[in-house]
Length: 190
Image 1 (cartoon, rainbow, N blue to C red):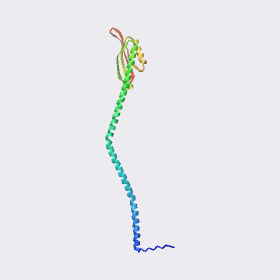
Image 2 (cartoon, rainbow, N blue to C red):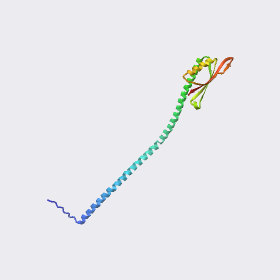
Image 3 (tube, one colour):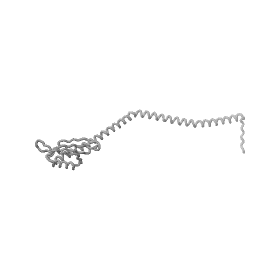
């Protein structure tokens, strides 16, 4: 048995329905086609709003931390200055130990040499090729040249490694006694 379909609608209504169906299909396609760019615009608008919100948050945070950043930079500057001062103090302490050791060396050598006494110790920092070294001018008196030679040998053998650059031994008299005045000039690192 075959089914038979009969359309009882008048042709005007049939044409109107077909036209209405075409209009609906065209409208659906137009809405679908328009929704694609609108979707992209909406996504773009949302990302712009998100970036603006992040920018506002960053501005707020940076304003909040502006004082902290300035303090950190100020503290870094103070830290650098403090490091320089500590370095200077370390150098001065190292030089202080050098002077203590130097004076102990001269005192021990003077005691072992016998009839010899030191009258003056002076120093000055050297420049040029000897920069970083100190020149020490040592003056004293002795009753004999032999004690001066013993003193010099002891100084030379000491751990200070003093380099003698000049020596003077002019004879003189002190209160009727024959005394040898001596002047030695040393170079020492430090």
